Image (cartoon, rainbow, N blue to C red; front, side, top):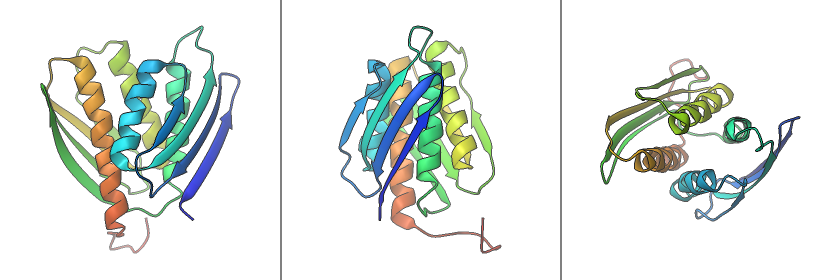
Length: 180
């Protein structure tokens, strides 16, 4: 079975995600943070997952808890399916040039080289940091160049989808230990 779901309900958020690992990139996303709906749809589209995501949150404060908890849910969901260990890729989109690499090694490490952090980049960092802790992987995001911050964040999530599309296709465990 390649369809998994999760429900996470806290005092701050109520999230439900259904994910088809071998889909076509179809999505229905409703978080009430329309910019994030657009950004997370890039990940779903490029990974070729099918996804239903519904979230209610304490948006009167800010979107931090919503984005953090969605990352936690995606980390836990993607952990349920056997995937390859390594994937690395580049993307060039308009003024953006970035590299992303993942090691699904059951250890936790996150690195990015974001400078001049504002709220959007801080929350992007929080998303990936929370994802890494729950998926239990090492993830590197290296930005060589960008001018437009929207293009940067959009290309990061597109590349994140491409990385997971690659992890699905290979489905090979690379470890001399035999287990991760």
